[in-house]
Amino acid sequence: MLKSVKQFTLAITAAAFLFPASLAVADTSDQVAVKKEGIVLTERVEKAARVIQNEADRLNVMRDNSHITKRTHQHHLRKIANQVNEELKPSLERLAEIQPDLPQWKQHAIDEMRSTAVELAANTNAAILNRNAAAQYVPARLDADYRQLLQSMAAQSEKLTQVADATADYAEAQLQGVDAGLAISQHN
Image (cartoon, rainbow, N blue to C red; front, side):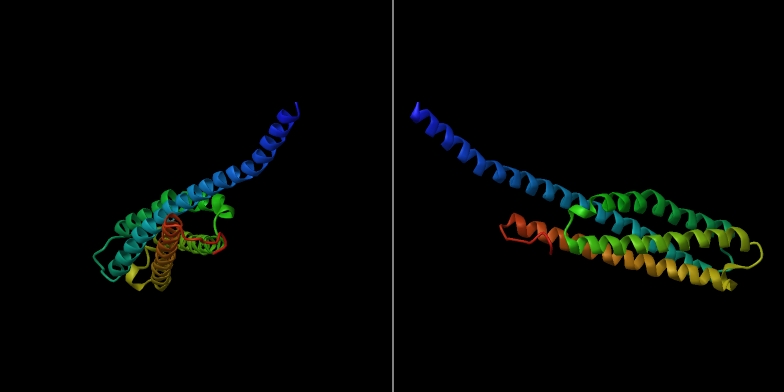
């Protein structure tokens, strides 16, 4: 009986040491999965921001051409609005959900992307309202407000592209380092 009590105590002690270690491994794999999801979402943000940037640049060029119609401007503005609503918004919302589980540097990058996207959405909405209301009276090439909105949209989408690109690249490099056996802090 003494032998079985010792074996039982030894088994419980071993289990106590192994159990937290197995939880740590599960947390690590969960953390890696969240980080990978964060990379995919950030790459989606980057892709949408590039499309928006191209459309905003195209509108800036078209703005000076008097042969481009109001409908053409509205069409390109709708394409930008669709990218904001169907690509940026869902990706940034999900990033916000997983944000607490990501490293601090990425949390700051997500905050930066979200605030830039909010500004971009507001300017896109203002540009749409501008073309819907003022396009009948003021041609795009003469409308200083519209010019400023397009320039802001182009600058914001460029900033969003750059932040998302750098964030995804850095996060991927960190995961590659972990895969290679480097000890990388969760807070970096």
